[in-house]
Image (cartoon, rainbow, N blue to C red; front, side):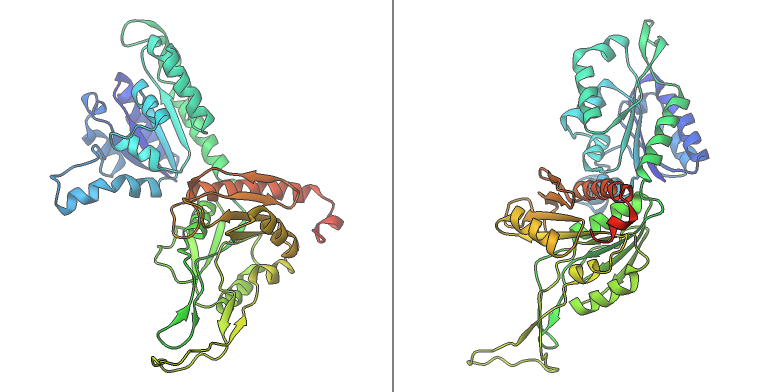
Length: 412
């Protein structure tokens, strides 16, 4: 697993070097990020020598205007995307406040906001700072957002006082890391099939019918499933997106090609998630040469494409089938109707005309409609976060399905 270890300013920063070694001993690759204050206690060279990787210390590392400066300006996004777990030890009162309040004024705080991976923080500070209502409120906020907080221990502090505030023992921090890693591998043993992107239906060698789908939602689902331990196959229409790490990708162009690819992988899947925006029609007789411009109207004969979701759901057996309903009106009504008619287990419905949702956006606003009658509306969030919530709901439904007698499952 790829862990980013954040080190903030405090006398306990020297213990982070030992934590780094122990994380490596457990097979993790560790990237270290140090705040400016942390460098007053331990040098970056120490962590670079131990980790074998460069230590990130600043959001901007060069003069503005050159290529290196541009790379450093967006480096927090690249690190966030490749991080499987963020661990901050020691975590000062300052960094806890920044995380809780969304302040992003250095590399570590900016990385936290850009990172969708789970986070473990181990606070260390003066006892009065730890017990202050502001710090406790920040800790409560972070816990409510899913951050794992490893409580500081009691003892003699560097300031000469006695009380809570010492960095937790490394064994306690490692235990929290192990539990978090184990929880995040909750799709281990599952084989997830995902479709993504648009399909293209050719009119002639240079023109085609398509839609505005960027593929971002489907790719986010594939990436999240792979990070959670699943074997993932991604059947993708034409997109400009990079293949998520650990994902097998099959490129297709048309709806019929996508159906053929899905058929080839469906039998080996346990969860099938149909996020692609499949063209509803194809051109009946595409021509082999470029159609010349004419003053006369051009008539196209369109034929309906196969409904991939409905077709495969007929053969789902014990598989969990998830579909998407991109609507512009009556989202709940249309999504529920689609859920029943297509024999899906979960339908992700959204209004693509709503700001911050739909095609080519980095965020989405969806409601999850489950076959067991549950509606789960989600606020505006990144597509990576939406992907995690979809997978959470899939696991919940998997538990519901497995609790039913075998005689009841096939008819669902």
